[in-house]
Amino acid sequence: MNPFITLPEESLSEILSRTSPLDASRFAVISRGFNAASKSDIVWGRFLPSDYSQIVSRSVSPVVSATKKELYFSLCHSPIVLDGGNLSFFLDQRTGKKCFMLGARELEISWGDNPQHWEWTPHADSRFSEVARLENVCWLDIRGKTRTQMLSPSTTYGAYLVFKLAEGCYGLELANAVVRFVDSEADNDAEERAITVHLQQANARNGARWQTGQVPARRSDGWMEIELGDFYNDEGYDGDVEARLIEIKRRHGKSGLIVEGIEFRPKTQFGST
Image (cartoon, rainbow, N blue to C red; front, top):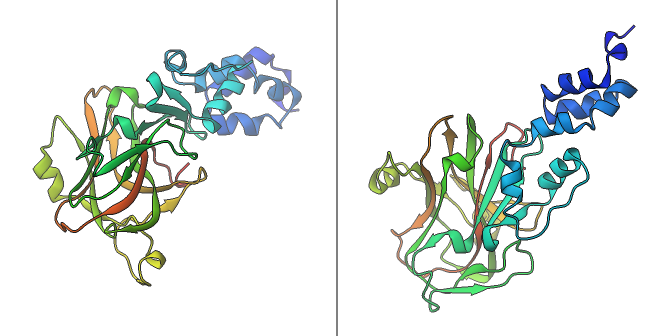
């Protein structure tokens, strides 16, 4: 006889709450007791971030869920927009760890306030009210900064530029990217270890066959993303981490980049979420 069959639901809920969201869903098929326990608020309350209620309270739209399990999966599949509309939040489904996207209005964009260089415009595919569309610059520099305390501790995060390319875009073949802890590394030092990134895929660039460095990937929400770098968010560290896209060496014209934001999310061996 399976020894778990005779355990009360409260005990099974306690057991499941010490596993993971993925394991809790798997255990649901073992028995009726586990199935009932896998829906418990005790279980899913443990999987939600400890500050989830404060985060949800900042949503620009009401967040309504009958159970904590329902809330958990809602936050995994439907990012909520916070703080007046320039920041979004969601959960990594496998781990329950926190993910944020800084909207374009939260980024520091060189010449971003000059309409000759950047246009701020609505976009049908964006979760934010505005995106930034590059009209024409020679100097491309985009930074996104967040506090490490906003993120899940003891976690390796990736930072991703979320973007599209307008028809007729040009000058965006190559750029550099870097992630740094603002308090511990100067701009110049970080630039020395910047990686090469490609905002256009090879088959979109006059038949180019080979690319070295990061290449863009298509997301399920219709946007593209490029990894700018990663970092380990050590427990107890409280400071700013900055992700940056930069192209200031090849000073030819650039146009057609549409920026939705920069996303910070946990990295896993299973790839992006």
